[in-house]
Image (cartoon, rainbow, N blue to C red; front, side, top):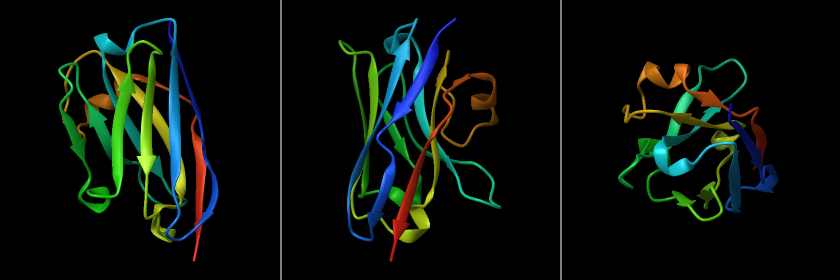
Length: 124
């Protein structure tokens, strides 16, 4: 069974940037839709960005124009470039893989594969 391993989180000031990585071990990204999700303390998990098997991307309204999802099939790695970070972006960020093409906000993602997450903290 495959595993997902996130990295790249950290603490930055508002306006800064981070790039998150999600390495897939044991299976190929190209067979799955991949997504980034985040959960802040006391809040529900929300979809941030996804990319399906055909390369189509989807973003939450709150991150459009600031975040970019991409993948390197050769490296079997998913990325999330986060620019113009704001304190409200503070959360635990997790990547997920799903054998299908669910919408970003679909509950189907719960039944996919998940990494353990990487913390992003943005200070004002």
